[in-house]
Image (tube, rainbow, N blue to C red; front, top):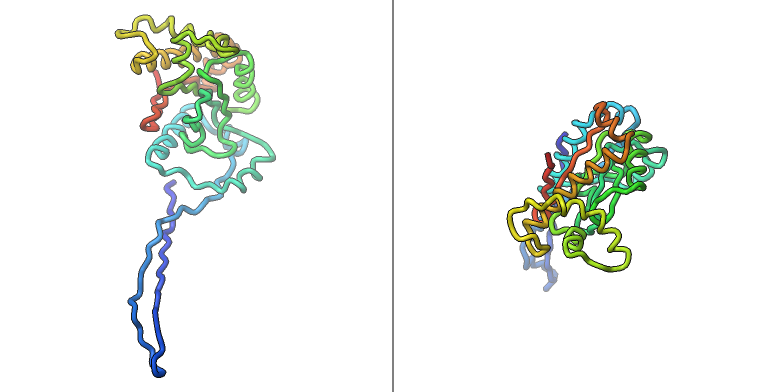
Length: 250
């Protein structure tokens, strides 16, 4: 439903006057000042258990797509976050689980125009899965009722570049081994296989998303069965840092 935001119009009338011989002389004309339209925060309702149960995976996916369209147009929902915090304190019934990279330029809730209580968000550099994240996803879907798992990589990913460059640094080295399978699956790239080639980095990033989806299905019998039974969907996406557009991968 489309929001109607009020226009705020303020007229300021300035009068300069002086008194000479008991007479008033108006020396300035009225000035009209227009102040930019301001959105009024709405008290969006936190999703209930009944409303979450009525959702389908396709409905949630469409909701994310529509939210991204609003984000691109700079038309984010103006929410009363204080009210939402209080309303959500009694329980949570999110729509989806998002696995994103750690990157600070990827504000997950904003990208999809979602608020408090809407999403479970897991973040790790390179958006790969391990047993902890798989367990979190199982909780989000099997226990808490989320209908969608979205794995989202992004443009210019530093973790992908570091894995390509075989970076050796503390625990980062071990972490990057999770991305190596995607590099091996990118051998058919037609071009220079370098972290300085944006096309190659994008190719590896998308393969990493697809590999992560495969790891989710192979690493969790619970999520695989839910997916096969139509209770959830597991999908991939690629976020463009320059445009804010989320490309949903097939």
